[in-house]
Length: 480
Image (cartoon, rainbow, N blue to C red):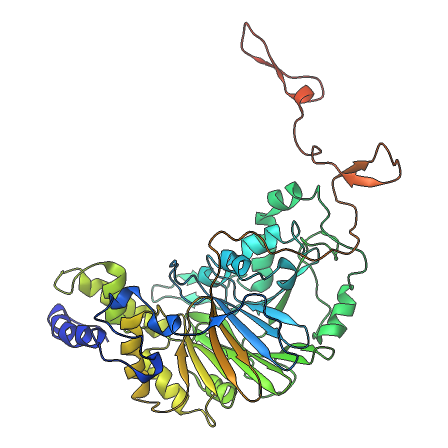
């Protein structure tokens, strides 16, 4: 609701009191104590988790979920949204790829070659921004194969206001996004193509369709070779499908790894957001992306092993922390009302998350709140709100570098401790690679094509001469 300034000041006492909760919560463990630290600067829940050993081999019967970004605000403790999911049969997936997560993928030792299948829930910047780095530098590392990007099709929305002004419809789906993304990165991709960016024997798009259970043969967005690391294949999904027809909403179905990924509508900002459900070996995971509570989530989230669902703090607290204003400031009401508008259009409040869980039968084995700025003060307040509606059931709050291993008998939560100075992960020996796009013949082996790092730049003898008297550039006849 929209509040007046007087109502706001009355609300401030109650809300700040909720933030100041200092009593330990059983799910935090004994480490939670707001008297020992500033509760907004510490996450005792995350700190209390056992350490995940980097490089741990995944058990053949386990699924592992690594959180690389868990906020919508870039924070050193929490970058924007992304999770990495691996299964014991050898398949792996990236879900969303928000601001700042590339460094954490590196620190976790996740190689570029494992990031060729990316599932986007929607096209907001906090879910797509670090796609640029992964795309641009993958072929320079060990991802010498195309990037496949799943996401929603066009919104098909036309808006007409009360004055008769029309906006849309726009080309705003995943294919249009990928086309412009490819064009945007042309200078980069050409500049890195003196090195090999592909290897022979990568499956053709028609073979990929069969191997991954796609509805259609994927079509790339540019003139790259279909096996090249700079080729992009968008796979558009119908965001209107609720999953009532078992096959229509299948995004990926790989019989060799036994992974099936389906999608269903999310309610977020405008038409064209989706959520995903991954099923493998009797285990299941739902990743909501950004969404308001909805019945499709209740239908798909009930009984899953891990439900990863967005949640936002109250609009009042959001405005307080984001604006830097005190409740007594006359402009604070503007910050609050805007935060409430964002929440109404886009997100799941804390109590609503608890109510949503209470409607799932059976409930998830583990519910994970993400997209939430997690610290001792915000977690304490949120836990109280969620438990008002969902008094029992396993709940946790995601933070970057949390790792969850899931098997039929147990779910283990841990935290990774990584180096702030990590380089790219060491790659295994690559297979034989194709000649680069910018090449020359080897002088010692005249039939062998080798990289030509100077092919695209002006070499010394090509630099135009400058007349020492007139200071004019004397261009040669060849244009230099």
